[in-house]
Structure formats: C-alpha cells, structure tokens
Amino acid sequence: MGPGYLPRVLGYFLGALGVLIIAFSAKTATDFPKINVRALVCITAGIVVFAFLMNPAGLFISTITLVFLCGLSEKKFKPVRLALLSLALCLMSYLIFILGLNMPIRLFPWSF
Image: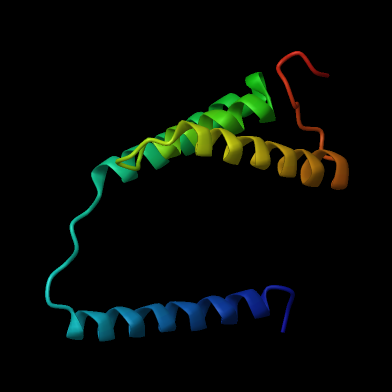
C-alpha cells in the first residue's frame, strides 16, 4: 500500500456504484426528461465569466456577476433576491477565504 491506495480504491468503488446506478435506472426509466438548455447555458456562462473575472475584477464583482448570470436561468428573474444572495456570498467568501484562510485574493479591482 502506498500513498495513492485509498483514493484509487475509493475511485474504483465509486465507479462501480455509478455503473450500478446507471444499470438500475436504465432498467426502470420510461423516457428521459427534457434538458433545460437555458439553465445549462446560463450556469455554464456564469462559471466561465467568474473564472475570467476573478483575477482582474476581484472577488466582489465576479461573485455578483456569477449570481446574476446564474439567476437568468430561472423563468422569473428576481433581482432583489439575487442581490441579497450575492451580497451574502461575497461576505461569506471574504470571511472564509480572505480572513479565515488568509488567501491572497483580490477583493476589489483597486485592492492590492
């Protein structure tokens, strides 16, 4: 046994469990659900934009952008709820990553 033994065995067990779940669900499935393309595109775009904005714009602006782009995936857009969610996520990210873990993350574009 070496340092990679446990992750390898865990990966094999999780892969086998996934094959079993696919086999049992394919046996009992009648028809596949419709894919929500709008949600798929909006959430993927939000993650990509967050990744590209993180370094130049900072944590605050990129988190707000992520929340609002992902909020576009819903049929009913609720800007007040999304604003409160984005501010709460910014505060929690600041507390956890910048203060708690002392990571060198830019909070605003003009910081550092």
